[in-house]
Length: 602
Image (cartoon, rainbow, N blue to C red; front, side, top):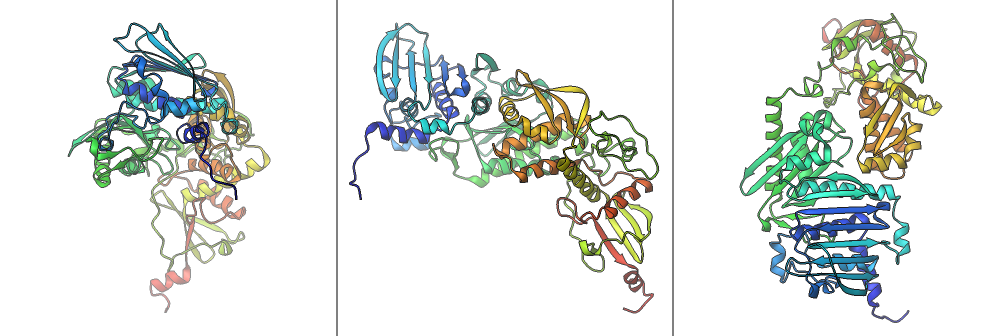
């Protein structure tokens, strides 16, 4: 066994830096938080090559005095904390005194700063944790920190970084949070020389939100306002058409600190549950103000996680704040169509287009009319219907039973359709058995099987009548660039159009033009959530999501339409469950009916 020895300071510094500086986004976070704590009202962030080669943060804050400039690079040196008791009453974002020390240990840092009282500023150059030079310079009041060649002396760590576009996406996502968390600060974020975000800093959350998401999205948001028992909650929430395929656009802030919190997220989603489809998530910006001793921020070096002294109290406050906001929103404005009575939201005219002449793949869809006993090709836009999300109550197994795979209807038996119950359940008989079929669940299974087959043969895309231009966030844009070939393989043929914009030329045949953009964004959301590697299970999941465009319960179908679906189901020996695993068909035998009506003895 080798003898124990103390590590050199440069090794200690690099190890410690790994806890704070995981990637360029972490560098920007630490520097911007320092600027906020310095009282800045204007902060400019500029990055190049995803922040791996160049990061610069400029603020107009209080600045660093000449005598403190060198100490700022030392470990555990801070102006924000002097005794342990202050940890439970912090009103600053930073407090550990590790940021600049950790950043400098793995990069080349140039610091320029001047206080209001000083006649000149100070420039400090630090390379890999060692001070190279200190000199006076002319500079504006405030601080400018430039970080270059991140991880130049830790090549293994740099090798774990993702593509520059992906790293830039992480930084852009952080800047979105910083803008929303600090409406009183004017932010400018520049990526490779181009301004991506600019906020006015007028102190209004609404203005900050518009700077990030735009005026059109803002107009569809509901305002949150709550003030009870020392907890103040302000914010915005979007449901309906604004809901997303993942939680990446849920933003939470406590005392102006951006955090990640399952407690807040679950409370918000519980309150919005009845207004969002299963598998989708509200977009929100929720800012919470509490007494300082209500929150413990000393949980993790990255400061994303916090603890609350009364978690239930906070959860209840968030729930009621969101619930009240959505109630008021629903009372003052017409709800989005998908949140009307789900059983009757689709126009009757759309239902009549469910079946039509098959069309050739890779061709634009056109209007169609019903042909008797013909089954529509899945590329027809009339299939663009929203999946029903209400949970299905368990079905008693006796005397009505689920159809199992081994007891499917015999193909030779004649089907006699009697109609439907509640425009949801198709009632028919075959042989000596009465069947009740969930039209939505059956249609889901049919579409899922067709999509799977088309994916296997590569015949899955449908050209749009004209390309659709879609502007993405930087993070979404980087996901698109990374997975462009994969998206094409499942039916989304899109090209890079520059300026975070893509042109969409074709979509999976199940979608059609009306749902093209939403379907594409859903696919991007799924890729963003699943990470870089998309395996077979994720392929299946993408197709699975498209299946939610099946006909719904409540849609009025003709007997010909019912028959076409039933024959498709029976002739292809499809599984008698929907892709979610719910039963499609229930049955009751003639003998059981006669027993129930006393025609024969049990």
